[in-house]
Length: 281
Image (tube, rainbow, N blue to C red; front, side, top):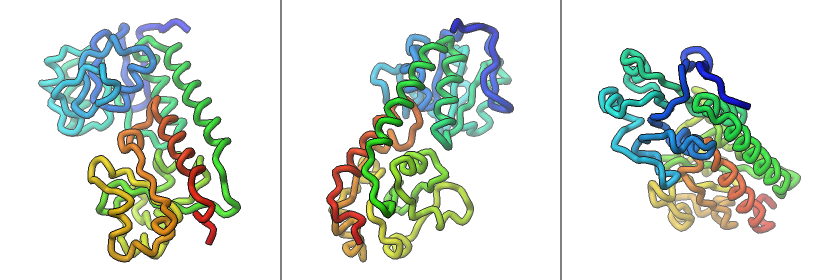
């Protein structure tokens, strides 16, 4: 399908109209950076934020997505800026300078992620590449989902975002990934404000006694299975006793792009490799 410009991409406050195919894209979203390169728009990207560490060839800069500076972004002379968060009135600041900006907030579902890939395909004139990327993602995730070994009683898990016990519920993107693997989230009943990212207490986790613990804080915080088992009161947990403590790539766990199948396949592989004693009692 041939791209047509001008084109409006996105909906509501997140929509952007592009008069022509952008040639100087600035990405302030690690997820968007990965998507742009996956769909064939890499040569159109001239700068990415300091957190965009993949792919290696992405033109990394000192721009920050967390503390954006409108003037610094404007100096890159972009004809499209892709953001994840509208921090410090970033969108208004860019629009005041007539710089097109596409806002893609964190995806809540796989469907959201696929939509964002397609949006970037339309915005950059890479519709075919976006379609191929989505199709590959869907195929790999569907194949992995069919291969999961699911016990009669679903295994219960705790996903550790950091070592202060912040976690993610089933209402989040990573939560949907675990749900596809047939797992039950111990945090769902603890999310009183429905943020999707509650902070649990050690006592709550011990009381819930999960079958599996996923560590998304090995890189950031140096957490290991040994350290988890040494926490006060944690040695009695099923996950600790059976060795069902699984480190996962925290970059993959916090993004929703073309490498999501890598994450899901790794989770499925780890689940299928667990000993039969996991979830047996």
